[in-house]
Length: 303
Image 1 (cartoon, rainbow, N blue to C red):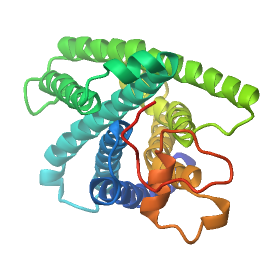
Image 2 (cartoon, rainbow, N blue to C red):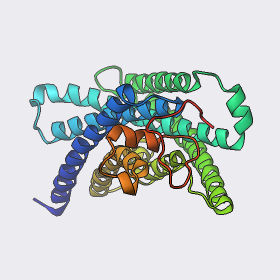
Image 3 (cartoon, rainbow, N blue to C red):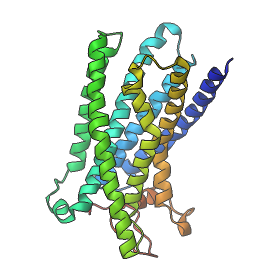
Image 4 (spheres, rainbow, N blue to C red):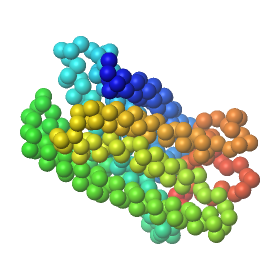
């Protein structure tokens, strides 16, 4: 076994462990937001993001098992592998678009608080989530139709679809996410210095989630959209890059529940509070007075 193969199996094992832990954390968030925490508009986004992360981690774990030959025989593994790979791609793009929507809507609510509070549609968050799920599903269906060998593969159309997806995700979603997060960070920093008050926990959650995604999940997206078509790169380099980007993307999808717990926990009640209380406090969207206990549920006021 050469060094590249050793690195591949080692990183694959770490990615599998991360996937299992991440699925447990995201399933807990889904259950709490569905039954234990009253959902606000931003809680709706977090619920959909947790579903996308859980689906991505499940598909990633399934793919890793299929690649190492642990689940099915060779006669059926290829078809299952292709289906799981496309679902993983769908979950990745859905998570990216949802995170972009979260940071953008939070940025608008900060820049235009009065207009946003008075004129926002009642079910804006649910409508945006629905549109993003449908858009990513349509985009991935077209990519699958032209790229998957089981259907009607066409290299030229497959390349065109990847370039369109690359332009949409890396050219539109990603810049909007970075711009809105940067504005939000500047605004939070300014308010913290002027008012000498801790930033709202929801601000910290959004900024931390965006930072983790950009540092951990983006390399995998760059491979899918750009490096996949680059034939001049060495095969060993591509293999190592894929291994590390998969592991880092698993860390990204697993990190959000940890972020919610760390942001929502309080030093004086870290062990006494239930998970529902901690999650509700992390997603709370109104100012938190110093030295006072915050309610344990998300409020319906977004500003």
